[in-house]
Image (cartoon, rainbow, N blue to C red):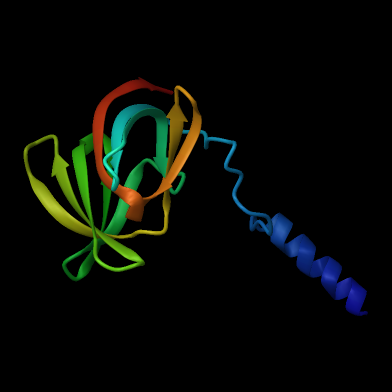
Length: 139
């Protein structure tokens, strides 16, 4: 009986899309649009990436004032990060229409993309800036 429960539990995770294995750092998610960005980390190192996503998504999602906000990459010019604490970062989001707003984000989620050296990933808390250079193509 106990063995049957374990099998059902394992099948539940597989069928419901949950993974018991860590995220594969060697694969990029399939994205609808291919953005070329320049990132700068908190130590001042810069790198250009393509096929960029944050938490496997093409938008940032966080808190603005008392509400939740989702901002699509296509509307963003650059994002400047400032650590609030070990879990949160404040992102000053500069839009293409010259407006800006501050958003509180989870600093433990990852930005991932392809560099000329290979696949690169970094926690948002370790970033200083993201500059969106262009959309290379839309699928």
